[in-house]
Each structure stands twice: as structure tokens, then as C-alpha cells.
Amino acid sequence: MRSEAKERQNPGKYTRNVWFTDKDDNQALSIRYTGEVLFDKQSDFQKVKVLDTYAYGKMLTIDNMIMCTEKDETHYHEMIAHPAMLTHGNAKNILVIGGGDGGTIRELLKHSSVEKVTMVEIDEAVVEASKLHLPQLSSAFGHEKLDLIIGDGIKFVEDAAAGSYDIIIVDGSDPVGPAEGLFTNKFYQDCNKALNDNGILVAQGESPMFNEQVFVELNHALKGVFGKEAVHCFTFSIPTYPTGIWSFQMATKGGAHPTKNFDADKSAAFAESNNLNYYNEGIHTAAFALPTFIKKKLNA
Ligand code: SAM
Image 1 (cartoon, rainbow, N blue to C red):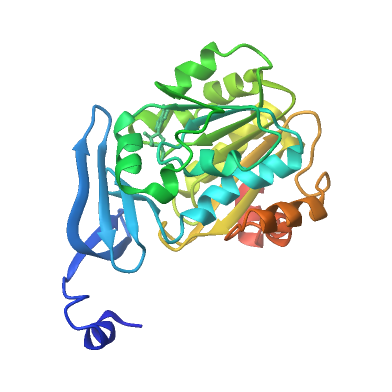
Image 2: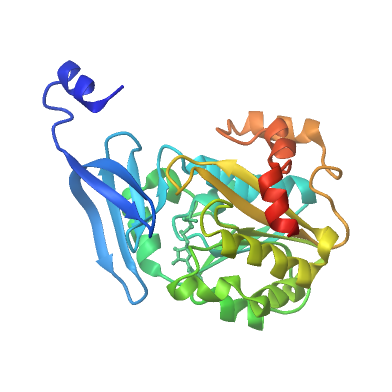
């Protein structure tokens, strides 16, 4: 329903005409909000804000880019966590790089196989913003299996002992500022070394229709490190990211395949018992079926 009509139905409730705009060179996405900025901090790394929107709940932004909203964050966080977890089947020791809002660890910790999640987030302000204003996202920060480290994930992986992790999840922002190094060959070589023989890596892969060059380069970098057959791109829809379609890249060691080595019944039971919002066994398989235009870009 358009906001003018909502205002007629609820006089006084939708009165502020203030818009947040996530603006890129050639396109922009605007979300109407109350005008209230709940959190606003310039950290050593970036500008972190939480706004109260009309249609998407509370929204976290970093350097004026939308990171997540309460309404559609499950699309991102369920898809960054569950396809890898259910492909692996028995992941115990997990490393998350970034992910300061807490959504990714919340999803990982739903798996009973998990013994420990180490999360390395460079910016404490993101964790603070989420703890203060985004309880839906930050609910797992007190979990006994979580080891939260405030520090540089790039350095952490460089120093990690070989073969330490079953799964590494790179939940980083766009390749600017502290996240730039999360898109380099060297970083993924270090991740490969830190994974054990059956380890799986998932990385935030940008949009195939926006930041196309980064999307393709990341896929190629991972193929260079893990091998061509070991890298699997998958996509999901998310209305509050530029273009509405976003990707993750999965790289597997030890030959696991995300759709062949996958127990659909186990996935369905997991999704149902955890009352998931986006992920299910059908989405798991469908997400890896890429539109032709994306295949062409990756194979060019
Ligand atoms: N959902 C978001 C998106 O794609 O728009 C990404 C999640 S956001 C919470 C990414 C997080 O990565 C930020 O909190 C940022 O501080 C963190 N980050 C960026 N570079 C990092 C680094 N080098 N080490 C650890 N965390 C990093």
C-alpha cells in the first residue's frame, strides 16, 4: 500500500517524509524512515547508523550503505549459513569474519553439531549498534559457544593454524575501507590453509548485476585457490540491496558438492524445526541454478 493511503487510514502515524538513500554512481535505493537516527557513530573505520524505517523495521547502515533491515535480514543470514552447514553435515568449529550485526552467528548456532564459533569483527561499533537496537539480530552474542574477537579478520586468518576450521564464513561489507582485503587472492589462500581437509568457505559475493567486476573477480580468485570444480556460486533475492539479487560464493575442499552431497530430508527438517523464514530444501538446490546471464559472466 502506498504511504499516502496508509496515512489516510492511520492519521498521524506515517507523517514524516524523510528518506534514506543508498546512492551509487548510476542508481539509488531509497527507504522512507521516521527521521529518527537511533545510533550514529563515526568509528575508526566507518560511519555506523541505525535508522527506524516505516516498511522494513530498523535498519543498519555503514558509510551510508544498507547492511541489513529487520524485515529482510533473514534472506541474507539464512543463506550465508545454512547451505554450507547442510552441505558439510557435521561442522563443529567455525570461523566468521565480519558479521558484526550478529545475524550470521545466530543462524550458525542453530546447528547442534557446532562446538565453537569464533567471530572476528573489526569494528566494535557495529556490535554495539546491534546489541543496543537490533535485538532480533544480536540475540546470539551471549551464546556460550561464541568467542567474539574485535580485530582484523585478514590478519587473524593469516595467523590461523593450518587445518583449524570446518567452515569459514566471510560476512564482510563491500570492498572499500577495512573490507578491501577480504577480496584478495592472498586472503583466500590463507582461508584455504586454515580450513581442514573437508572444509567449506562461504564469502559474500556482491551482486551479479551491480559491482559486476568484483562479483566475477571473486569467483575467479576462489577458483584459482580452491580449483575450478570446487567453487559454487549461488544467489538469493533481497529487496534492500542494490538490484535486489545478491550472491554468495561457496568453495569446498575434499570434493563436497552443495547439491549432490546434500540430504534434502535433513535440510527440510532443520528448516521446519527452526522456523526459518527463507531457507528450505528447495531453495538450497534452486539457489545454485544460475540464470544464463550469470553463467556467461562467470565463464567469460
Ligand atoms: N550484510 C552486509 C552486506 O553485505 O551488506 C555485510 C555484513 S556487515 C555486518 C560486514 C561487517 O564486516 C561490518 O561489520 C564490518 O565492520 C566488517 N568488516 C569489514 N572488514 C573487516 C575485516 N577486515 N575484518 C573483520 N571484519 C571486517
